[in-house]
Amino acid sequence: MLLCVTASHKTASFDLLERLSRTPDDVAPTLVGMTPCVQGAVVLATCNRFEAYVEMDEPVTAAGAIGVEAVLEAVEAATGVPADELDGAYTVHSGRRVAEHLFSVASGLESVVSGEGEIAGQVRRALKSARKEGTTSPELERLFQRASQAQRKVKNVTALGRAGRSLVRLALELADSRIADWSAERVLLVGTGAYAAVTLATLRERGAVDISVYSPSGRAEIFAAKHGIRPVAEADYARTAARSSLLITCTTATEPVLGPQHLQAPAGIAAAAAAGCPVSPSTGSGTQRGQLVVDLGMPRNVDPAVATLEGVALLDLETIRLHAPLEELQATDAARTVVREAADTFHVVGARQSVTPSVIALRSHIFSLLDSEIARARARGDEDGKIEQALRHLAGVLLHEPTTRAHELAAAGRAEDFAAALATLYGLSPEQPAVSAIDLLDDAASA
Image 1: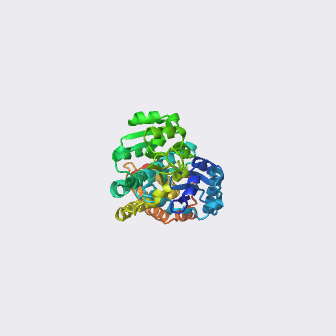
Image 2 (image 1 turned 60 degrees about the vertical axis):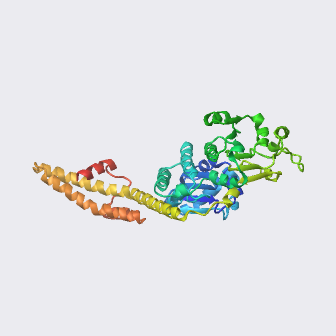
């Protein structure tokens, strides 16, 4: 069975989500190694959610409860957040609800800003990470691949993508009230990942031209050369930060990369004074008046103490979330219809797969009898093959109704009833079909 344990901006505090996102890569391996009941795990950690998708061994009694307990233990072991602190901060989806939830998440329907585009890439990277760690499973592979397909369909056939805005765009829209002329802003971008590239493109759309980039991991020069902006070296970071009017951080660092010490550094004071920027008389710092700091990091990239500096305004994800617009109802309704249909299809296909071994066992049995009768007919002189043709047609007719009924039972969650019927009537074991599925498909086609 599939299981999802999710903590998001709808159920958990920003601080708790931040702590959960510090070491998400350790959760899935810990979870899979914790109990043989867990057949696979994929962890999705973004700035506004932390989710563990798990495939449990279905026959295990109380598999759902065991799975939730295992997730909480793995989270505590990997992140240090105790299970009791998570009480009330997470929800659980199981069975049929898991696919619809993930498809909604991948499509941006569960995001702070409905329809945001970044989440689709994060879902794909979560699966890629699970593959790298060896923690995925066939059913989780199918789940996440179908989630990406559902997201693409939502994007192509609904207006959600056009109505929704990314966190970057929303943050810069909120900054509009403080910025009269984007072309006059001295912008410092801290980070060089995919989010930084999106941020840079959005800044340029608004008219920003004076843009520098600093990378805590040392990739500033490569990023700057690729995008045609100025790199900032480690030695110049504080000075550049002090004289920038807009600072945007979007790194994956687990500790703050910008704090009062950067904006108040002596080098920053000298540079700010040389540039004609006033020094705060009350604090004696070198902070430039009218600075806006936008923190898009999770965990947070900016020390909250920055907001206490005179002349500095801090816009972080928690603040952005409070200003998120109402959902575009028409686009959202259309998108949810697409998601529900995709989830229904996922379950129909999964149900058919669950009953496939039993159908194969029945077809194996019938085709085995058919081969015996055909051989007997040939021995009796069926030279023109008419008897063989009639027998194959009869076998196809006989198999049609049971196969259709098997799929109907599977869709209703009763695949085991079909297996039990085969065992009772024919003594067949679906675990050991007589021929392969490919052979049976070939036989069925010629029947």
